Image: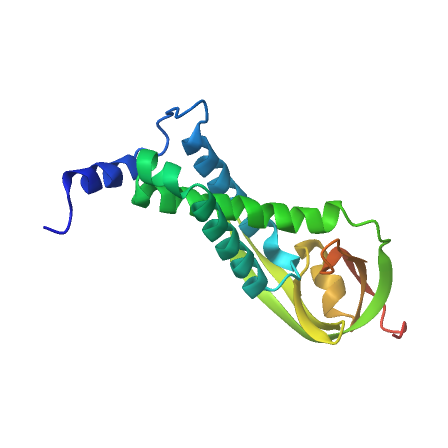
Length: 191
């Protein structure tokens, strides 16, 4: 039989994530809830994130493996392998979230405003429960790389009548650029 009674108990324990339990004074399930909230915040705020997705995956995997190795005996004895796998992935989400936020918060560089030529403009149709709208997406060359940036629908008319945008870029603490502002400018302004 591939599953023992202990394995089935561990699987059912994963589905009881919102049930608060305490092991050695640490609410370890609450850490998982925080990790899930962190990934939701990352998805919500990731529209103009210039950190490569591959880098974020590597950071998450390395932190998950590190936490697993450090606390392997505790996990094996107290939580079981299935729960510890889920638990450590959510800790990886927290570490990736902290990496993204520390890139901005710990940077002491100034925001540099520069004009960029819009390589391509796309209008993305978005729909909410009550209404629908068009959201402009632009592609610009930022630090010799193409960057796809999402703008507020507030600038929809202005962005259709121009070929340039002013972007406020700040060098991050981990040397990844941070977009602080984007606004369209008139065509007669050049790079």
